[in-house]
Length: 268
Image (cartoon, rainbow, N blue to C red; front, side, top):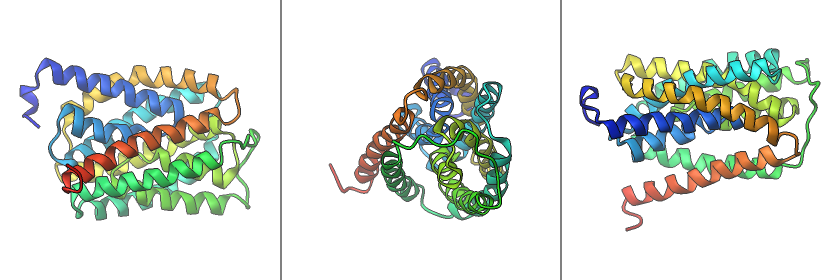
């Protein structure tokens, strides 16, 4: 990656457009921000160091998730007690996971990241027909599940340097049984918290490109609003939002697996 001061116009445009796409997916499905942000930074914008791409993505996704959270909150889609309980446990996991993740080879992290995405996509496709309970509240029954899924999602989120929405949304649905539209809005509480925790850890090690993060955030503000509007329309049909989430994850995972296999010399 060139020095930030030498960014050309094409790189700035690509960074901003990438932010729009990242913000849109966060607002639409509550996940996919870092699923897209990391490969966009590495393969489109041209960040050569995976750890810098991961750290910068974590910061940009956290900021874009906060914008998306505000949009969903205004629309009444956020279940705050469930979201804050999940996020509180997850921050602990994210701190431990991000500390461990910095010591692993960056290319191997991206490969493992893609494998995990394939597994999550399969789970979401299996659950696509479940409508959920829109009146769900935190209780003695689901609170332990929220804490357990939160801790695990946070650990994976920090280890792979991602906002974690693609783990958080399925985790919240599994723990509470809430509808997908509410899981999307509620997940952004944890996505913001996880992303900030991971970004702070990477920033401490100097692994964030601040100008690039700024471009992503600027584009993401528009994308988040558009994504939230799309999520409300899709949620009217049972399973459609779940299926879209899963297919997005699977498509990007397939591309990342191919790129990783190429870098390891497994394919020509």
